[in-house]
Length: 176
Image (cartoon, rainbow, N blue to C red; front, side, top):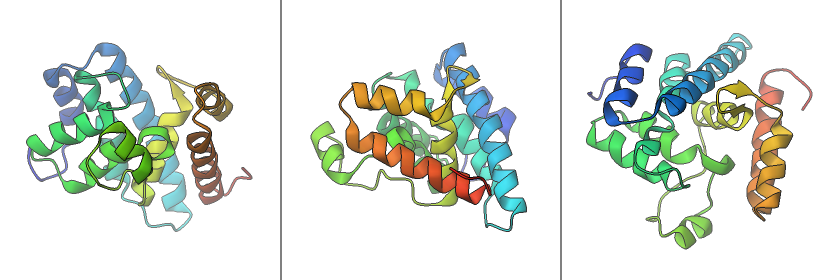
């Protein structure tokens, strides 16, 4: 890989080469399809969005699942992307996509280094949004993710997911 943004095909090949399961690859492709549709609609509404970055970021968002299936897949994925010399924009999408974002306090409790783990850019937010709506490789209601987080006693994360969902729905011109 290089500092240049890979193509969708190159990103999918990278997932396979790095050791992601077919289930993770299928999930990532489904997230990419939803993220791409979302990004195109938002872009067409006049919002500045790098559609190709969203697509490739969505393909690569779970690359860390080649190492672990815990929440740590975000930081492990960022390490893999950095080692592969991928652009910082991709690394940020990977490390900021989980749980609607991870606060610095939560990151500290997880033993992560001091960094930003909350999606900030439109591209990061769109990938995180799409990921929260895809279960395995099918679209599911946002309530499924929110209820799961509440059951896990991750109340603040459930609130962040709802805020993120509402923000993207508003950018789409839809009522949240």
